[in-house]
Length: 148
Length: 141
Image (cartoon, rainbow over all chains, first blue to last red; front, side):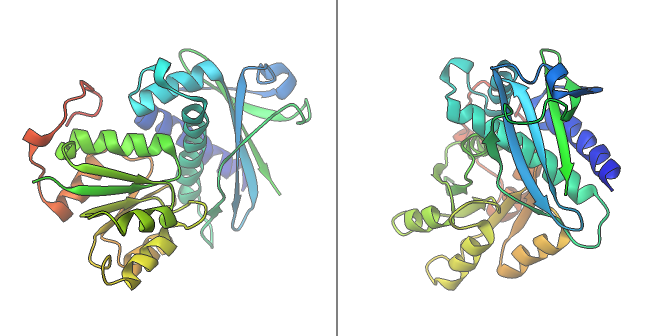
């Protein structure tokens, strides 16, 4: 089930990034947090819990420069007018759409329920946590899927 | 004809995207009201005429379903059409909203056309002379 979920998540991130943020993506390799570049200080991360036949959470992490570009494309506002609230809201909305889209494409007996996305820090995560890397033209973002 | 449209979503960027989509769809001249959850929206609606509500489902304080149910319980609001725009797209959730009286349901990620189509079905074609041209080509129809 976790493999199926991850496949749906990757398909979903591609669709959402292209439809809503006008940023095509390519899938990279899996990398440990300590070797992914996602432990840098300018990384923004967001977590969303889900429950259903399988429960768990998804973490999405991206450099602030990429989130800024995404927010500009998403909202149609110039970067110099975007606030930290716009950036965190954009990352939360990306994760919300990616998970919602992926989970409704996953065959289960009972529908999934989504939590509310929250901004988190990655500093306390184990260095060996495995992130699936996603490449955009300007930077990489990482996704971690954890099932209970 | 100008409309008064209420956008209910806890996400500030998503409210901005919906506003941008409405402008591109020809409803840019409408009076757009915003609220971060159902409770805020109900409070605003007590003092403002609203022709259409566009609401998210997953919100803190009062979610979209509780909000639609609360609207339908109040005579003043029960005839206002509601369009749900949500990441949750399973059929049982959609049925819950439609049974509660929602007029339309759009799943995220959405295209501008998807929003436009459902709104046109409810309000009719927008008067394009009312559109505010913000120079944004990405969302043009």
